[in-house]
Structure formats: structure tokens, C-alpha cells
Image 1 (cartoon, rainbow, N blue to C red):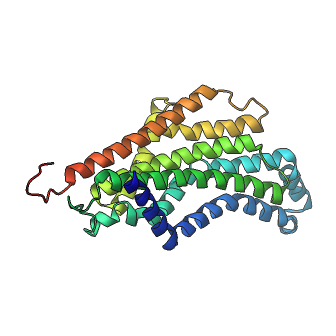
Image 2 (image 1 turned 180 degrees about the vertical axis):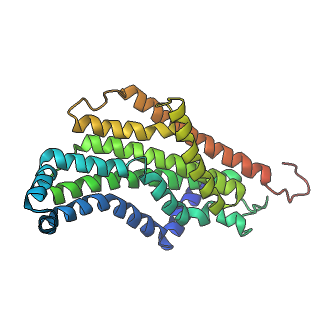
Image 3 (image 1 turned 90 degrees about the horizontal axis):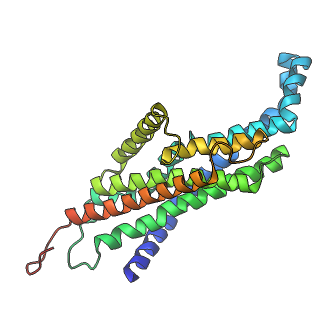
Length: 285
């Protein structure tokens, strides 16, 4: 346990002092504020639209946009874009470029061959990384979703209920956390952090297509996107939040996603055990 605590502290100090945490925070902040700011800018450009399209056409367009339904619809589009279809792959690339040196880059530089006499075990090396990065990604995703909602209230005068934002932000965070765990598995196991980004992006493109082909809309990490969009659509349409989904389905899908993340942790550990060098003369491992 002492080794695990020391490992988490080491990962955090390096992540903080190398300004990688700041880079990740900036990335999430940009993703959260981009949609509300763009919508506010469009509303502020009404005069230009009146000169270009004519007063009548501009008035008709902005009447819909400035109404409550229009603002909710605009924000729903923003949150859907921030949710699963687009946001996780975009933020995934940013995150992996920041944590790649700690999730595969060390092995590539031959600095993480673990001697038997070093006191550092594969478990003590792998677990702190998984304790540190995936939960951090989930927390920052939820905070970014709440920030986006607050920005909509401040800039647009309309926002979604906090419980809706928390649910969608949590599902988005789980989706992104799953991608990060998959990346860490490939990056640490293969010692190829950059190549692992391509593996994960390819899997994230192929498996949703397979799910769509076979109409698998639940119980997989890739079904979180559809659930996210449906929660928002139900709210903006005046339906119950979980119509067509079911709260139990969301919980089961989330648990399956967490279980798969745990599988990546175990797989990474056993891969390092298999690659471990035995530099002792009297013991066999």
C-alpha cells in the first residue's frame, strides 16, 4: 500500500510540475466554453445578418434562436457535440499527448525495466497510473459539462437542469475514461504510446459501426453516446428524461464500462509481469 501511495504521489507531482495538468484543464475549458461562446457571438451579430439577409429574414431567424426553445435546442446541440460522438475522440487525443510519456513513453526510453532488487513491482508501477488518470478524466469531464451549462446561463440566459447535465457529463466521462484505459493498456503493454492512439481511434470508429449494424444500442461503452443524446432530446422535447432508455439500462451500461476498465488494468499488469526481467540468481519468478 505504501508503494501505491508513493506511486500516485509521484505521478501527480510529475503531472502537475510538468504543466500537463494545466494543459488538460485548458483543453477541457475550451471544449466546455466553445459552444456557448459561439452561440453568443451569433446572437451578437444580428446587425450584420440584417444587412446581409434583410431585416425580415433576420428577424425570423433570430426570433426562433432567441426564444426559449431555440436556446435549449442550440444548447442541446452544443452538449451533444460535447457529449459522446465528437468530444471524447477530440479530448482523447489531447489527453493522450499529455500523458503519453507516463503511459508507454518510459518503456520506449528503456527507463522502466524493473530490476528484481529495485523494490518496484509491476503492480506498484501499473496501479498508480490507473488510479491517477482515468478518474481525473471523469472528474474534469463532469466539471466541464457543468461549466458549459453555467456559461449557457450566463451568456444565453438559458440552461439545462443540473441533474441532466450531471448525467450526461458522467456518461461522457465514462466514455472518455474507457478510451483512456484502453490507451493505457496498449501504450504500457506495447511501449508505443503514439501508435496506441491510432489503435484506440480505430477501435472507436469500428466498434460503433458494428453496434449500429447489429442494432446493439445498450450495454456497451459505445452505446453511452446514444443514451446521452436521448436524455437531452427527451428533455428538450418535454418527455421524461429516461424515455426509451430506462435508468436500469444506464446503470448496467456504466457498470459494464467500469468492468472493462478493470479488465484493462489487469491485462496491463499481467503484460508487464510477462515482460519482467529476472536478474536474480537464486530465485525464479
